[in-house]
Amino acid sequence: MVSNESLHIHLDLVGGIAGDMFLAAAIDAGLVEPDHLTAQLRKVGLGPVEVVVDRVVRGAIEGTKVEFRGWDRGAEAEHRHLSTIRRMLADSDLSQPVKNRATAMFERLGRAEAAVHGMELDEVHFHEVGAVDSILDFVGVAWIIEEFDDASWSFGVVPAGTGTIETAHGTIPVPAPATAKVLEGLEVEYRDVESEFVTPTGATILATVAARKGRRSGRMKASGFGCGSRQVEGISNVLRMVVLNASEQSEFSGVDRDDVVQLVTEIDDELPEVTAHIAELLLEQGALDVVCEAVQMKKGRIGRRLNVLCRPHDEPALVRRIFEETTTFGIRRLPVQRWVLRRELDAVSTSFGEVDVKVGRWGDEVLKVSPEYDSCADAAERSGVPIREVYNEVLSAARNLFDDG
Image 1 (cartoon, rainbow, N blue to C red):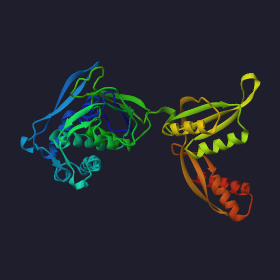
Image 2 (image 1 turned 90 degrees about the vertical axis):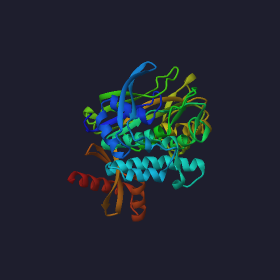
Image 3 (image 1 turned 30 degrees about the vertical axis):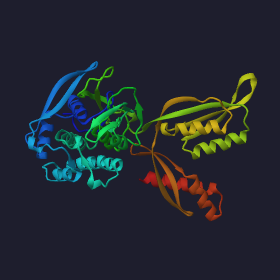
Image 4 (image 1 turned 120 degrees about the horizontal axis):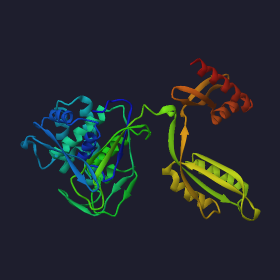
């Protein structure tokens, strides 16, 4: 079993994700031992559950597949209400953190089911997800997440298939309505394949670990493949789990790395005042930085290069705004990475009152402090003094504060 140090765990959704694929990938990567997982699942109270591990091939990749055996067949049911599952978990011998995590995951899916079917949460009953193997999937996943409570997580674009599947509710589209509801807010890519890439359990796993997002870097520690039950033509139906040692990030461990997008275009037929106005609009709309620089263009004309830095999810709106507000017909797009000091907002006491400062840290070390302009401007206006006077006193107070700290 991988030691619980400062880990980052990345999920490559090659063939999608389901509960059994997650557990199998964790076993294949050495994150957990099958015997330890078995011991936890037997605490649910469903009988002498056994985790059976097998080696299989899906597409071009060999990996681990798991299934459960040995539970009390009397525990099977056509469906279970959310209240029944809550009670089952509460009465189990699982640790309280695992009970809480598994219950929260069922409730997350339950809220999606309630929204889709137009009912109250307590009225929700699960069919496929209420089966014993699905309950064991949820509990196993909850235990792993809690076992590695200090780990951060990440995953790539979520794949979605097409077509329909047959369920207890009848024929429904892929992804299932409740699955789609749980995935709201995550980036999804549709593939022209009639297959369910993400199950309701898999979607709930992604939504759960998405809240524990971390930097996708570190020294490679282990990796493993969890295999699904089906063979999908042209695709390896596997989930890869990559375990990184996030505590071994060399000399860059004190600073964050960020994935951003740079948008660049040159304009030679726009008034300078208009370009400045556009820059303000882009910053208001979420751009991280906007820089305009003079450039020499075709036939010796002097123009301006507009450089916009933004987060990927803000890119579509900013691209449209640039096209709307400028005369350009084309924008270059460059995916880039940047190093970012860990920042926090603090306040210092001055003769002009409390004024905000931005603090930049490399790990725990304060590398720089910068007075916040708006806060300084407000203090200067209240006090009737030049802003430079406020700025200098704030900077001196901040340096004294953090040097003493």
